[in-house]
Structures are given as C-alpha cells and as structure tokens.
Image (cartoon, rainbow, N blue to C red; front, side, top):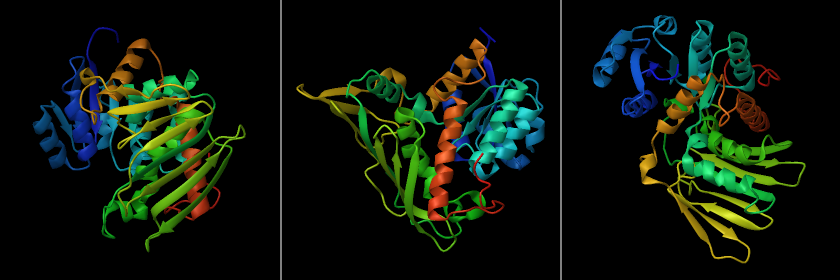
Length: 338
C-alpha cells in the first residue's frame, strides 16, 4: 500500500460517522467503498448521501469485505469491543472512535487481538493528531516551560439531557467521563504519561452515571493534573500547562485549538496559531491522514496514539469510575481493569 488510494469502510451511520466520512471524501488519497449498519435502510441512505458503492445491513459483511483496507468504527462506545473485535478477527485494520472501549479489560482484549493478527489498530482521539496540539506537545517535550508542575483541563456541556438520552443510559456507557472526560485525561497523559495516583469525586444521576466528575491525577515526580467534565454545565473547555519556567494557556476548545499562548519567564508572551491550510478546527482529517500514513509505512500502530498509551488512558478512566462508583451493566467489581 504505497501509491494507491486507501479504501475505507465505515461501520455505523450516526453523527460521528457522517462527520468523519465528510472529511474522508475530501481527501484525494482516500476512498470510502462500503458502509454498514444494523439497519439496511440506514446503510443505504448513508451510502447514497456520500456516494458509497456498497451498503451492508449488518456488520459481518463489512468486516469480511476484502476490498476494505481499514474500517472506521463509529458505533456508541458500548459496542466498540464487539464491532472492532469482529473487524480485527476478519483481518481488517481498524480506527476505533473514542473512548476506545467501556473499560481497560475490553481495550486490552482488542489490543491483544490486533497484535496477534498483525493488524493496524488506533483510537480515533483526533486531539492527539491535531497539528497545533502536536506543536504544544513538542514545546513541552523540548522544555519550553521547564518541568511540568500542573495541568488543568475541563470539558463541559449544559445539555439538560433527558433520562432516556444515551448520555444518561448506563447500558450505553453513559455519563460525562467517557464521552467528555476522556479529553482532559488524554491531554494530561499525552504530556505526562500514566499517573501514579488517581482521586476523584462525582455527582451521579438517578440512573447511576456521572453528571459531572472532578479528578486529581498525581505523578511521583511531583506533577498534578486537575481535570473536570460535565453534562450539566457549559465550562470554559480550556486547558493550562504550568511548568517550572513558564506556562501554556489554551483557550476554549483545547482539544481542537485555534491558538495557544506560551508564557516564558523573562520573555514576552508568544502566540501560536493554527495553519489555515490544516482545515477547519473541527476537521477529523488529521487522524485519517495518520492512519493512511501508517498503513502505507507498514506500521501496526501510530506513534501519535500508541496502543500502550490508549490502554493507560483506559486504566485511568477505570480508576476514576472506581472512585466515584460508576459501573456499567455486565461489569463486576475488580474486572474493569486489564
């Protein structure tokens, strides 16, 4: 796979699948050749909308389509283990939406399966592929603000979601943490790796999912991360990284920033802005480009989103849920972690 187009299959037809496919069809070296849904009517409507040749009323047919190089899994995360696992079992490469799975045990099963099959697997955490976020990470890694001391990040929506909504449904992995909190956690671990200790507190709904959660992560080296997520309040959705020699502030939308400001001791602030050539701030094209680059290079995982890093994030999310008492149907005490 060097010069020809990368042939994509899309598994699911919801909002995320539509967003990703809209960006894919604009990439000259990508081709969406098939889509699958549990509903044949939904698959056909999606295929007609995006000019896709084949529409399957079931996941299995897509998983076994030999003309598909990689499958994008965009189901609700409660189905990620089943959907991605089916594709990996059939020999397909997989890009799986975030959060990667419900828990670290499921994530470890997918990673083991991909490594056993020699297939490519990546979490679709678009933030980690964003060029400006990568620039921020490079500055931190190069010591621009010295040794990292604290990270603050939040992601909150004032959804007023009714009890029947998927974000309030335990059977669908509902709650703020997995849908929104995965961003602050991933941001902190992108810069500092897996924490040594996790404490957390949450406000739970009557259904038993978290309406808002605050977590404090700490590392043996002395760094702390104060993180927050909510589905009952629109927060600043910002982030700040403070080091021994400066600070980086990322305003609204830290996971798809238009700019950030670097404050270094003894210097004027420096603003870093997104390149217009990189596309709209909410574009998912960068994760698609990274998948295609890796496939052409013969890699089975991306250095931007290594599987061990994804597993570490899932372990942290498990630890937070353990602290606040959120457990999903089918999970037993002590069995969420890998």
